[in-house]
Length: 394
Image 1: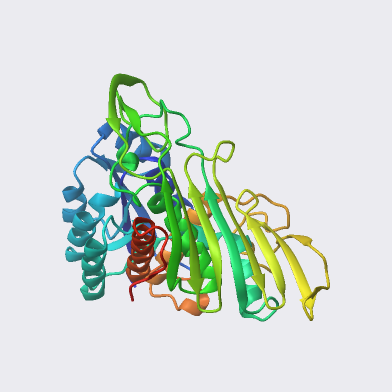
Image 2: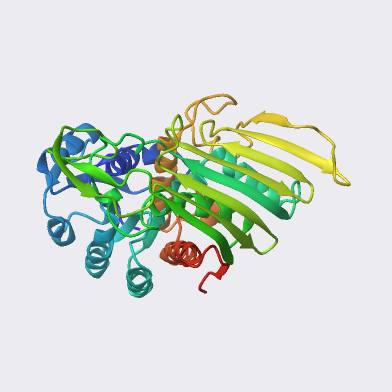
């Protein structure tokens, strides 16, 4: 095991800053030792953003050309957190240079590019993983445990949603998030998290039906400065058409049942609301990401409620609380930023060669990112065929 690991982040926007902060905090969670970590560089074509993030999170320098990260001898691990369409070129170059890569979701824009990235990851000598941070929410992890240990048992049906409101305003500036075809908007952005959440609990999505898209705001003003995340900046009088979806809804079939999923970036009053209700052979459970350390659980006997709906504040006996929070007690706040920290620690454990049994759960494989895009394409095909059921490619 190397005695030192140098870390860089490509992308200094909203999610890039979350990755940068997470690498800094990662040694404080989990158990067992790690090599010495050196926070080397934050890279972004917008040098002012890169410099600000590097300074804020304790990185030694900033760069403005991602090729400099590829060629740097002092960098071993790289987070790739840029526009989806840029992932393939950057990731393939990093893997060819022997860097370990943690790529933000979705893996890329197209199935063809995703297949190429999977091949590059499988042939690389380094580790390539994908960032699905919602798996790290203590509540979702606890529900998964209750399903797998028989407390809840086999999943019969599921209701899941991811509602956000970042695109509600018609004056929100044009950015890469609003460009592309139907299926590359809300479905790709927040929907990739939602389909992964459903599969995390219920198993692989095998088919979809009833696919529907809606674009409520069909054009957006061009920005006059950098757009970071969902920030509103000063805009011009010039507008550009929106190419993709504000809303998507569809049904899914998985090995033991079915469900309904909805995603939106125009859900007024819901800044960041992922929720799931799962109905199983031995009861039900629900989760609201606004309260990541809490679930509502019901256990049943012969189909009848035995416990009623019980709200559980998760504690040290549940995933990610012990060895994850400085104050490991029920009711202590946990949030989305913690998920990035848990993810970074899991990736470091794998790079350091620590056994999986002694580490946080491994990060997602690139093949799982490919599958997510195949689910997305099945939704698109269903929507284009008036909601007809479509099989997910295997």
